[in-house]
Length: 138
Image 1 (cartoon, rainbow, N blue to C red):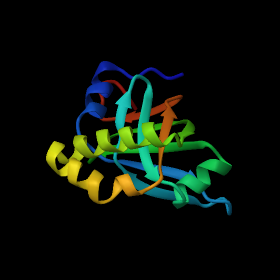
Image 2 (tube, rainbow, N blue to C red):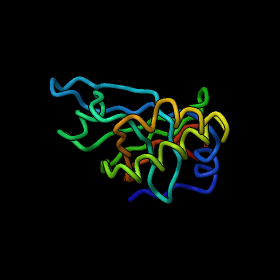
Image 3 (cartoon, rainbow, N blue to C red):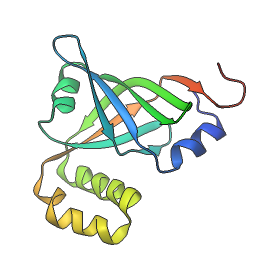
């Protein structure tokens, strides 16, 4: 288990986007820009059931996520657990939508789209950290 520094935690708590990389069955990488939030030592994301990343993670539940701001970035690696409990997955997508768009727009997104979808929460347990632009790292 890798330990995030306080500076890295603050960086991840700011609203940014993660690029999630999973492995296609052919062995080629698949990348997706994702909303996320930090929960302890886990990066939490959410997707609609059946998307490429969801299918890839069912076959190979390890991934990396890069959160960048120019030359300052964190690449986080580790195993991912998938939580397809409908109630908790809807709670997580609502939390993410609120984080990225505010309460009012998130409520509309939930009504119009997300509540009608089968959602899956992706929880990346941070085992590895590659940090750049944070004092003292390479």
